[in-house]
Image 1 (spheres, rainbow, N blue to C red):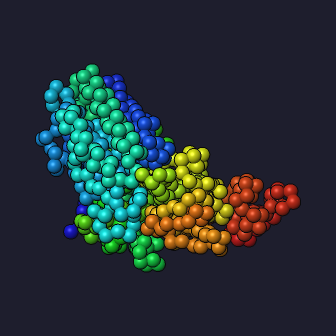
Image 2 (spheres, helix red, strand yellow):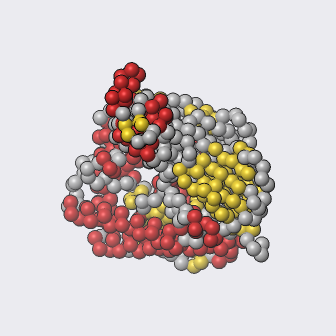
Image 3 (cartoon, one colour):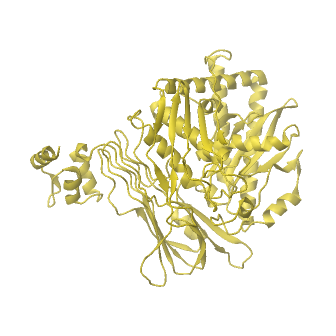
Length: 596
């Protein structure tokens, strides 16, 4: 048995029904609602993972969970909400009342993973249930076996408290006992409570704004406009897919370091993209079987949103699309995801799927590589694709609760046509912001000793790969540390003659000892005050033959200390005078001719 998503079907011609001006106004209003909801959530949140990193999503949805609009935030968070709603509807459909507020985080019923809370409010118009205002955010702790997130655990219940379609408010009446139970069973009650209230406020705002929009234009007009926008988005994406030749395109085989318990035993990843007419299917058959640790991926809540995101961004890149194509349910209709039940990308209940992001980020990376020959002007070379979250935690002074800091390391993009890869940025499926050093040092017993681009030269290419970040922390008190990451033992792949990128690393210094290499995945090890932890994120692959790189660009790289003079000669065939740092044009031309 395998899971599949997507539904085929033609789209109506856009532009009929609601007049063009009203259509654009309603579309713009919906987009503004989602963005305002996100602003409220991240400005009100207490935890740094939401308040600083913006690890959140928000939007408006219809009664069946079809997306009407979404915030410009982490794509995993917003893309998973339709799955959350379907999970909630299986229990609560037909019971919603004005004033309800629902909490959900069950990874086998739509959640992206259990620390990602979804808060949802039904929206009504003239007594009719017309949709939902919903948002998601990653909370610091949900009361599992270890602080933050945990890898080597037995099943989904060991992750922490699961809330399956629970009404925090029923008909406007707050369930204080349930909320107190929630807070009594986490290590970070203060920030969790603040984040929960921020999510409720975000949903209330969205509900008010959507009700006002319907009140102004009428429910029939708003619904007609939404249908037109969905059909328009579907039509635009289908046109892009249909223009390509039918066929199945396979990515190079990849692998993950290990499952966090059986160290050194790699987990294979296989991915194929099939284009058939105006439909596209991403198939993960052949990837590793599910594992006994938490290193599995919820299919509906994480795999499906990732596939949707990757196809949309590749085929309808906003920077390359002349006119506005809104993100809504219409985008999802031509896209299908397949993963065998019992695999790492579609585990059987009750396997834990707490730590799933390194696996997820490989999906858009491999889709790019699979379609490279077909879409050479649109794809990027191999990216870091190994989001490396490090969770630091410990008891606060007094011991009544924990402090938890979730750090998302910044990797890099590969080179792409006309541009070098972006350096030190959260890439692909994730787009969280970095946390200011001052913010972390103010709130937690950590001192940052280094935070910059890593020292290794970037991957060579006509357009070089991006450079990952390096971050080093000194622990000021005994600290638990857990990691959700992948060192990319198979480094990011170069394209069209570009060089492969560079793997990452995690290291520790303890009591003046030599550097101690660490596994990429750690299950809450307690380290001592004075220990130093350093994380290097992978650097992306190069795009195109290095000998085609502009000598002037190579010279700038040398001046920026990305390459040494001799590396410029060996990698790019560019001869630079080390005394003057000027290009020897004649020697460069002769050397490149000799190597061509």
